[in-house]
Length: 399
Image 1 (tube, rainbow, N blue to C red):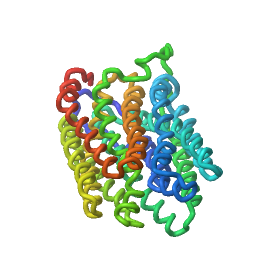
Image 2: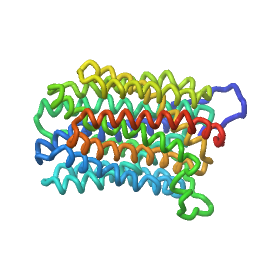
Image 3: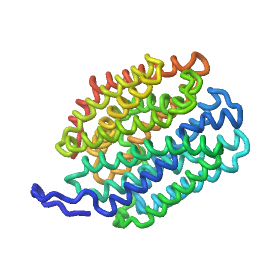
Image 4: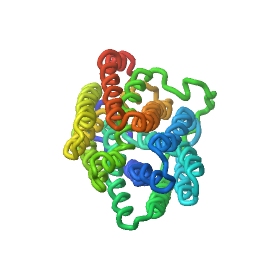
């Protein structure tokens, strides 16, 4: 950790070796996860003849277990040696990709997918908390923004590579193997992290405030609304493009454009986050994202799908690091894991509902209804953000 010197004009080094390792490991985690995500609805449909509502229920299993583990993850990360917690859950996350290779029935696949959510949820909390720990405090907000680029870059590259490999090999197993190997590479990178051992002198009791950052509940509600929209769109865009727009290929381009927007806005927003413009970045992000979801829901053309991807990416790239900084600033230093866990729990709640209800709505009233539900929920989150969340954050922030 680099020492701060009060209001010293010395600019502390952001891209230190440990931060780069944590950044790279996070990239591999999301790469291994996202290389499968857009193909799983097609896999379940082609392999097990699953209907849309069944697909939604099966795929939502991981979100449920990730949601259940998140609050405990924050406690584990704040209580036990963080590197040990990270390596355990990251390793389990990587190995479970092998379960997809041997799942010979829809029930077995659903079981593996559901179990997989637990180490995924815990590993993301641990990895992001370690990354924050090794950042110099004067550049923490900026570093959080750049850290998210690892997610975005993986999300941009992985679906495209996965879909390309699927078209090239015609084999879903090949994609599962790529995910397994990628996860193991990320785990190896994390073994090289040098993290200061920090065990509290008196281990805190497991309690509600160690699992959930209650001060961040309004921010969590807004985040759940925003992630609901993303859950619907990101999960069903591939099968929607194939069935409604007649596009056999092109979904990978959707995710690439989405993540170009994410990366551009994170690069632009990192400077203003360093200047303390957290609320400003969040405000710009939620408005821009709302416009993107409206375009996606209202215009069913390929050009609109791609343009909405760029707009949603630009909005989310401003919004997410700003919200993460808000959660961190609402917590004490000893509750960073809890703050990260609460942020990601909120995201999981929305994602899980989006995946589940998106499938049910698609089966019952078609994709139009599912995507309009995404926009309406996003709109509700934006309204709540303006009415209450912004003022709540300014009143209760600690750092």
